[in-house]
Length: 368
Image (cartoon, rainbow, N blue to C red):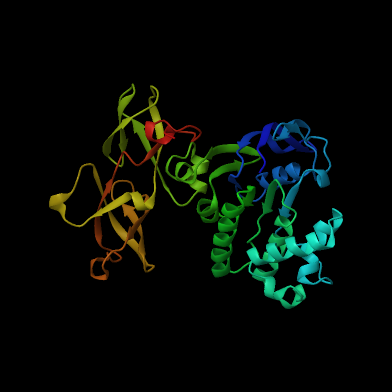
């Protein structure tokens, strides 16, 4: 296990910062994910940790050792790439043994450790098979076995599931997480898939344009996003324009003609952005039990997806369209297109941002 400290690291490509002043502490045995859209800097940071790039600013430590100038082969890392990088002319056994042979391990040790690694990824019975005769999922398992057989202190994984079909991705991400827990190996995982990151990670760093936007546990990233970018990138959300009616910390935010009581972290006045997730909006079917504050609208689209229904609602007050998700609803209670609808927006579950979307203003959004 390796403790990784990234201290104010920046990596330039010409005048462009691929990574901009990144600071992260990754604990021993932690499954840590770098998450963000294409071009956000996550793979650049991973490759810098691996030693494929040299940062222009900042320091990287593995445990207490600064590894800025340490060559890749001395960093004791295992890597799993998006493209697998398997040698097609070698058998499964030979592919997994490659790293041990490069380290001059003895024949008996190689035999023992390769078979242990293949057992872990459930490929021991295929040790003599050629990779070209195997499926994408099996090839990815070969790459994983090759990464762990050298007993690395740190495992780096760059979009390892992106070439697999949807069903196999679910299976592989579960297997990777289970194996990581069993080995208790520090793992840094790169993905652009939000659901994947939420499913496997102990903690997540969300990146945009080379900058770290937020670091936190999966539930913190999803429920308490620090800015509008994070809220928009992780899952689905509705952004509604509002304004603070009075000044101070305990205020009312006017939204769609309704005033919501909100407790802010600091005094603020003026325009705000109100973010509420589709599953946090409650459909009110019995007007007698309706809670204030409520808003009204019309269903313009209803999509039945089995475990949930996705509604698109046009609000009466402004004509804005929002998404609402209902889970485990009896089919006879489904709303239909054109139907009038009453909604409850719980102010305690929403996040209020400054008008530029850069800062969360309410206590809920800043709780950890």
